[in-house]
Image 1 (tube, rainbow, N blue to C red):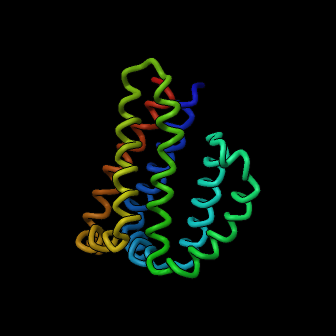
Image 2 (cartoon, helix red, strand yellow):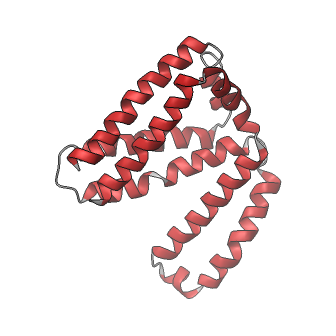
Length: 180
């Protein structure tokens, strides 16, 4: 199994499970989506994941200054986390999700770059959609509510979006299982 197949299966499973929740429990999903931007612990956990992942990537890049002062990177991680918790607490969950969506495409793009199949461009496009969505959420986290408030409280629309997501997730699972 190639790296792209593994990553595609993970992405497809996540899309499929999230969409199944939307299709089966539209009202519960609406409540969760409405409360997410201001959820304190979701924001703190995602911020911790973002900061740890960013520090790990920084240490892997082999910059001369970072190699010479890698102890400072280790010391900066808890300081950065505390500063984020203290000063960027408003809509932190949306911002941190945006940061995660900026970091998550890296393994997708790295594995798609070396794969010989032309269908790798499907996952490359998916990765760039995640980047765009992540940039918007980091830049203006209030967009989460603007994007969702029109349709999330209407159960038939949530169910239809969930069904479309189920199809996309199943296609990604099939792509990872059979093509890559």
